[in-house]
Image 1 (cartoon, rainbow, N blue to C red):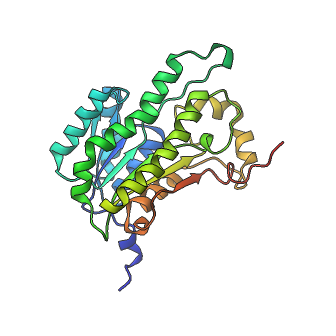
Image 2: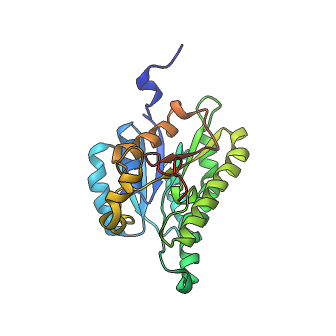
Length: 263
């Protein structure tokens, strides 16, 4: 018998980790998962940001915030151990923590590559590796465990900003998503990526202040992203509604990247 509409998107009893979940896109996703019934751990590098996010998100459900610097391999392992201490199974892993480095080509520094690739590309791999036993424990053929990687439309089209390492790291994350989807599908774990456009966040604040109106005007839907846009796609991918989707990169950008015309 077909599921009811509410069953399709219900995450009651699910256990989720959202990295970088104390602000911006990560917090939007964490809120959506909580409202759908999941128990959620969020992480962030700063303890004070964790405390504030836990306070704000607690009105939506069972949430715990854990400080962790995920640019470091040992910290990824520590966070994974804490997650597994809370349960031997993990239903949903959202790899969202990320960094951006903008600087002109002539002066772009080595640390602008290392810092960005460590957090944007290596960290999702390290966490997936460390949490595989818990994801396998949660997975079934009918209801797979889920990995959701947060990429970017900067990996689909070329942005105007000089974000060399950021765009490259997100393009690599999109391909890593497809590689892992092929490998983990037979183990009943789906791996998909979301490629956000411009959403209100600390990372994008300066850009939105400077050219937010221009960015919105170029989008076919004529606006920037909203909290529910990101919460909705995450709940879809994490729920029964998204259980037959893997290896996909979903642009959530009002059509900007996928309809862009050359100039």
